[in-house]
Length: 405
Image 1 (cartoon, rainbow, N blue to C red):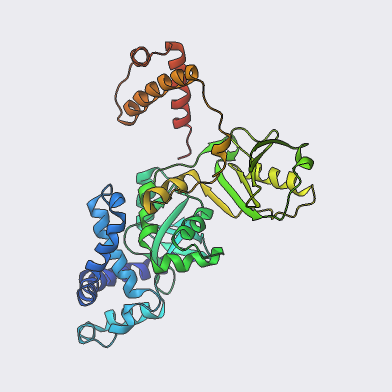
Image 2 (image 1 turned 180 degrees about the vertical axis):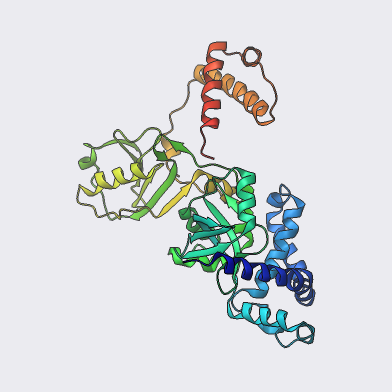
């Protein structure tokens, strides 16, 4: 049975020491000796476009958190300063706290709430390792209430106090990012990683880009009926491929030297289950926008004698693709050959699409700014029928209102 009173007592004592020793002394002491503030600010420069949109108070708190992490992480600076005169002047309680933290390194962790227990105590699951963590964090409870819940992942800096983990510094909550997104993001930073268990080392070596994910905290996942919209992709080099035998299950189009194989009944919205074969490069690409679509692709391909792996090499939500572009300035093209098969829109249809886009832009701008709007007036200005404008507006508002929170 969990002794909640003991946990609260230990956590309150740890918070008290952390405030006087870490917050008010240690961070400034070691940051000044190591020049950490200047080094972190230089690193922030790589993410200037993101930081400019964030509250200044959050950036300051993040700096303190990053300094604390450099001090107490595995093989951090704390051990180097254990015999420093400035440290040895502190009282016995603080020195014991300092030694304990060295023996129990702090780490950044992406985790999800598995169960709320009592008194700001949570059972959480590490999204990378699968480890179950007992975490005390009034900050999580406060943030959960302020944001209306719905956070699927949290990025926390945690330290062990002997009975549970406590959080330190700002909490990053994420409503639309999934655990599999973390591998995708880490691989953009360090392309040579191959396995999920390597993600933690990427986070620990450079947590700043992961903290920048907070800029997309409120972005929701995209769902169509029961399907989460995700980008699934795998690439294989094949010696040869006989396309004729796939005609039963696929619609095959050719723009030499590229072939597009669209899976019947699965090639349209929301699945877009398609394969691309580059005959000169012998490159075979499998793509889908849902996991069900990808599974159906693999099933159709493997029944012809192939042995393609069941799981895609890359899986990423639309939210993660957006954040990779925004934070890392990397534009990931999940279907690089599809552009060769896009059918041109006729001038007449393009003119009508332009009118609809004008109306949509006007509506979205007013909706996002919480301004009143007159659909009939906006339809007249855009040059579309009022009935069509009402239908488009209803669809858009229902879609936004129905987004998971």
